[in-house]
Length: 292
Image (cartoon, rainbow, N blue to C red; front, top):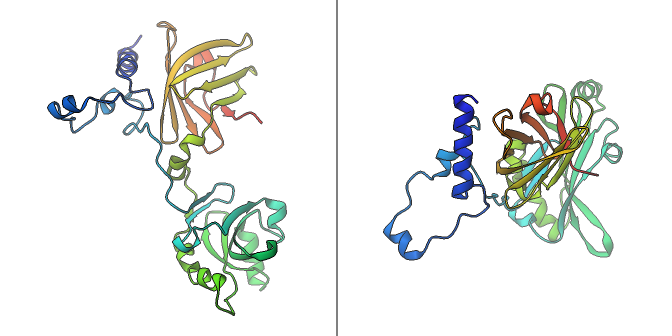
């Protein structure tokens, strides 16, 4: 075992002993808390393995009120406060449904106001198109509806504003805030947006190793993980914690010949193996998805 691996094992042992892998630290008695003020820097900052960048975050961050993160579309925005009501909802459209807005649309999202008798009024429409295809149509005067607001190297993100209100009422009130919603638009960033989705990551993932055998990962709320892999479906226990969009794991009781460190990146739907013992599991980069 190398010096670095030895340090890592010591650090994780400290994590387990100190309870840093648990979701909640044990409560301190009031008198003890007053007698011994908490240090400016928590112990967790010292016990996080050195190969994991940045501070450890063990508790989920509450999503911002009205936050809409449309991963499939590729955009995120915040509903104005007046839109954060029971009669306003949003839904993503797949490629087939999105083509009813524009034949070249690949994905779309609509924000709608519910009315009487099951009727709805659209407050905002967003959709994604191949950029060059849109530009060709635009030069011919055939692009639309809406206007491109964001672009990437090959995609355009189009905003369709709703019609102006013709009478006073609920729709007119919400229509006045449409620019507030558009002003918060941003390209979807999994590292930022998934912080609010941490409780929804799930507990079971499965994939295929480089040699074609199955691998399964089960993670429990108490910090216990079970990794099942190989043609003989060998099981290994370990500990895990979550840091933003990362699952940081540590295999237990495997001896000096097995590197205990595990690191997975959560991309919004599944886990990607970024670090593990390649002599045991094969190449990194393996994807583990949630069971269908």
